[in-house]
Amino acid sequence: MNFIDFATIYVKGGDGGDGCIAFLREKFRPKGGPSGGDGGRGGHIIIIADSNLSTLQDVSYNKKYIAKNGGDGKGKNMHGKNGKDIYIKVPLGTIIRDVKADIFIDDFKKNSQQIVIVHGGNGGFGNARFKTQNNPAPRRANQGQVGEDKTLELELKILADVGLVGFPNAGKSTFISKI
Image 1: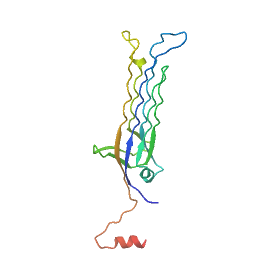
Image 2: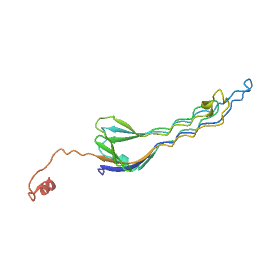
Image 3: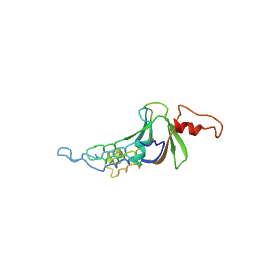
């Protein structure tokens, strides 16, 4: 098993679903009005600190994490399905940096600490949301927002249990190789 203390990953939140344009037509409601539902929210990507892990090996296998998109709205004021969130587990002592913006994001020091690293896009509004007294039958709906994306560097801080201090050529490396 290799000890991996550095990884670069790409994360993208899910896109929001589009709103729907629909009109209600039932037998006993001939002028039912607009009934377009809202789109669902795109999935978030959440990073969680886990004290049971000691290396970034699990993260290094998968270089891309892309959350699911939200579902589109439907008729009869039905809301679209929200995208599923992705959870990434990292060991304690992991430092997260954004590569493009070159900023420090977070340092995980507590067990079960979590941070939403990228947000999914919001769903668009259906035409039922645009109904007003002056416009009782709107024919417009919003598209869902695009989810955020980032390229991240994950680095694991390593603490040594024992250290050797001495003058150069004193035999420190030879001592370690013999033990």
